[in-house]
Image (cartoon, rainbow, N blue to C red; front, side):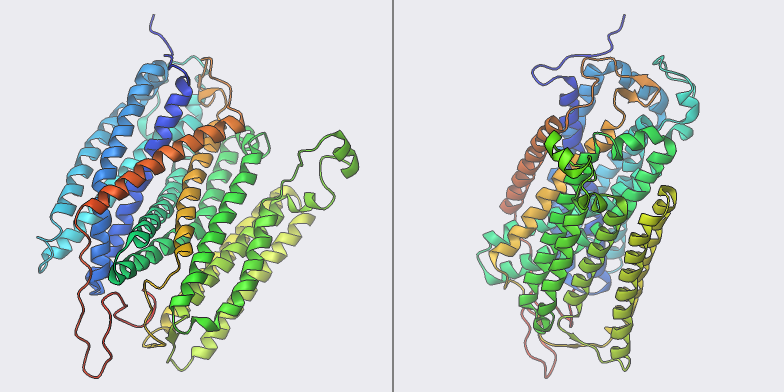
Length: 570
């Protein structure tokens, strides 16, 4: 009879597959997030006539060539582990998803060829209309990568939420007769797709920022330091900007998990895994604090930003209070004496902060505060000339105040209604924050038309400690990705495929949180070590061609090559 499981020495089969899958996923997020970053940068350079963005896109596409190989190697290791250590489970997936697996392989080849054409044809296809065809190759690269992501997501989401007709087949282990498209479009497939696309943008931006920080600290000339300072700013802006909307995609995924199977949702949010969310809250608090710190330090290189610096201490206060509330557990870990002193497992005061009404309110106020930091940074060296500038600023301020009041109202009102109503309140909080962000951005873009500059941004004038914040961001993002991957996968408990194929191996129990943290940390060290090696290799090749000095227009002051061509922050 065919065997069901293999055995991996020392660490066991599940941990071996876990490490291979997690490191592969981290590289996959890198090679999917960075092309999005590159094609947008190239478009800004193409249509905005700013060659810096084109150089930036090419520099990161060069890193993709190495990272792409690492992604394929770890994917091969994962496939080898699954076929030899979990043959019955892999046969089950292959029987259902056989056609999609062939399409996956074909798209992988097409994506590889597109990447090579996109990079090696960069200089040749930059003349005339060919530059638009080259940009089209970048768009195709993202299309193929997203399609590959969606196909792979269907396999893992099927494991979490197989269609009901599959669940009805019982735990026999035989693959039921299920339509491929039905298996692909399971309950959590699209929520995971949306969440991962946004998360990949966040992750790609953080890696861009870390690479720029590394090159900034190693720079030998002022021009080089200015270039990488600007690159770090762009990477941080992308990472934190996408992070602002990422929690909303996470809420959508969590809601779909609850709707598919309430038991699975309770295990995730109310069972032993609930403490993962306390760790997650702390890590996301670190992200918000580090991202805002980088922006506030960066105001030192912007003429005119000094008028906003007094407000940063109040914004820091809001962020710290938000992190404290978000990281407060609902049920305390305490001994018998402490439980008696509290009068139960819920602290009389802290228990109030441990529920979702308080946490949703805190995170939405943190998002508004972070968005305000970006707005002040963007406005720092601009002097609007439109006649309605003062009125527009007042309207923007009113939108912030109204959004904060609405968020606070539903946060407090949530304590006086039933749970099902309270869950609906979180949707109202999200919608008002998103509406405020969109409304303020539209007003700001209109107000910035023809704006005068208060002075050119002094790129490169950043203290080394600002770059360490970018390192903190990439480490925290990477660790958070591993932590949430464990939460998503672990809620299946002892099932390979939820209530369809049971895990009958000796590793069927869900790992303890401490052990999971150790495995995740090993994955983070492996990935960041390999990424550091890729950064080093990138430094061995030719240095990026920095934008040459341009002749200033008649009557204008000379401009350094690394300074923005137009007023304002790029």
